[in-house]
Amino acid sequence: MISAQKLSDANWVGGFEEYPQVAGYANYIIRFQPNGVVVDTLDLGIKLESTTASISDSSGQLLFFTNGCVVADANGQILNNGEGINPGPVHDWVCDKTGYIVQKGAMILPVPDSPNLFYLFHLGAVYETTTALNLGPFYYTVIDGTTNSVASKNNVLLSGKLEPFSVVRHGNGRDWWILMPEWGTGKIHVFLFGSGGISDSSIQETGVVMNGKRVGAPTFSQDGTKYARFHTDQGVFIADFNRCSGLLENFQFMPTPFPLLLGGGVAFSPNNQKIYTASQSTLYEIDLSIPAPTWDTLFYVFDNYTWGTTLHHLQYGPNGKLFFNTHSRADYLSTLTFPETGAPPSFQFKSLPLRVKNARSLPHFPNFRLFDLPGSPCDTLGINTPVSATAPLEKELGWFVVSPNPAQDQVRLTVDPVWTLKEAVQYQIFNALGSLVHKGKVEKGVNEQHVGLKGLPNGVYFFQLTQEGKVLGTTRLIISNF
Image 1 (cartoon, helix red, strand yellow):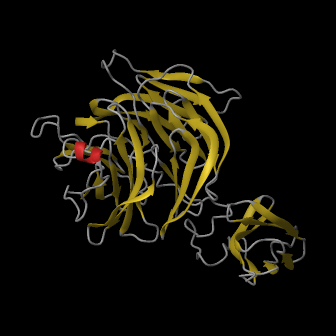
Image 2 (image 1 turned 60 degrees about the vertical axis):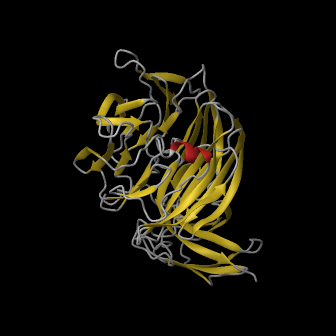
Image 3 (image 1 turned 30 degrees about the horizontal axis):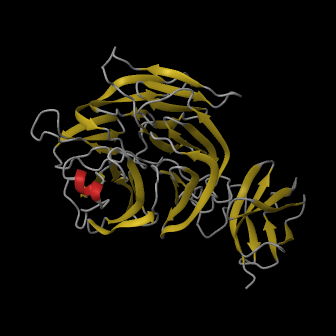
């Protein structure tokens, strides 16, 4: 079932009007509704070839979309100042003819705590030779929903040779992590997007150089704890991801066992145990739960169905199904369905008829139904609980207070006497990156004690109480010795 409260990705816009007024060439909107999926064909007057992104409101109504060249409203009307996205020679060459040509190259995100403000993140492209399309720069464009206009556009976040980006919700349940890999290096740029826009950035060196000629796409698992980056002629880079700190850990690389063509899609199974990659006419599966994972063929599409059919990029829908587009023009999408019983997934070829041509387009969405990371040191905003963002997370078991706050060399910890009536309570202090920097316990029968902070640098920390492994509460602690 689709949650009525998390419908930012409820409308997928596509369609290539290569021959206007000719049957089979028009726009479409895939509408994910609580009672099923509906495909409407219509004439929005905007061509979408490869690049597409859209955003809907909380009720599932389409607000804006882009083809990588312009930003338009739900009726296809270009917003004020909404032209000239991704400027440069490639824009001048393709935008009037087809729409922009970077797959997985755009995403629209609502600005946290600003319901009428949106950022369009988008990836430009340049031709260095007659055959090589290099990606970059990485831009953001600001959309003002109150005036239906573009407030600023083509702001450069990062230049150089890049790859498609991926986005996941921060563990606080509000902000977003954006990961942008560099092509030809082991570097991944990490941006933090919050209520103030892009507030932080860093570079993580993975040591795994990705320089394939057939760049696919990166992805996060649905719970945000896993990350993968795929080049069809090189392999899959896999890592754990910390939603509090934005750090990648436990790197693993799975080289392709044989040359793969086209494709480039990659996704995790809902339980994170398997990775799916698509190349040409084959869907591959890598089982991460076994000691020595290998590439296995899960499904093979060949001329028994349609000559030239190719599996390409992948995107989870709001209904939990994994959708596939093709590398060529096609009037359908295929799906992978995951039974709730835990049985193997089933592949449905041509399962979603579009009735008009899709030209390699598939939207690029994060998991909008992923929010806070309960029990983590960064779960302090009460996104999924009726708790003030400025107060301690007082769970249903009781309460605790840390004072003074801000603090210097020590704090007084006071806990609900009910907690320590029969057994001790443990406390942990985590820094802003989620690393444990101090721990101790409040003994049985005690409800107040001092906790030393000497040696801890100035900054923001998270003070957490646990008992028998269960999190009792977390609050923010500021250390300031100025």
